[in-house]
Length: 266
Image (cartoon, rainbow, N blue to C red):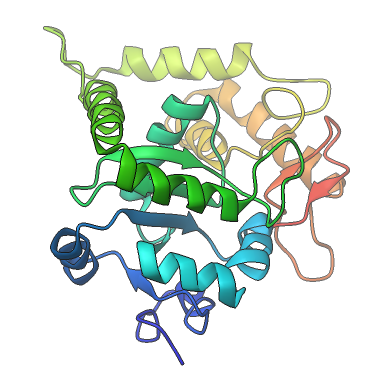
């Protein structure tokens, strides 16, 4: 029987519409239910091309036993990060603050007033990769929610305070945006460009389309030295395994410095 995602437009959410997990989209219906029943929220954020999102869905969200436990003890919300990058940014920041790293699927447990108190990414169905199983995580959260509400409140308040500080814009007395800022950004991209293999940084190497678009825009506005690195990066990507010569388009990133071995997401 379909869950509450069946009427959504997102292809990613529709992929989960027939999970035995009683998923809700982000919205007042789910949030009101969590408040009324005083249940923690399990927030799962992913996107359609995310490999590990599909792995966790198959291993855990399609498992009737796991779904029954989730439905009994949590209000479960699915979010497409491509539809709601604002929510993804907030709760990814929370995951990084709590664990030191982030990624997708993003798995966050929230109080009914949306304050995060536990976070992670992919959790396997059984303990492996030095990670606890998702079932063990659920059991621990259920137990803590019943037996340690004060500790959950303390953690959620600390994380929320950190997020508020991190996400609040730091205003200065000099807020004017000038061409000097654009020139400094351009120089930074030029200084950090990898002329050996193309792009910026080391493996895994990401295409960084915003940087390339910025360079092309600066070139169109008269910065002649902005064109060469933009073309060099695009040519390096096109020559390597990043480019799909059959279907077109680029993979999400290259696992090596040479743009040869793609990570198979587009």
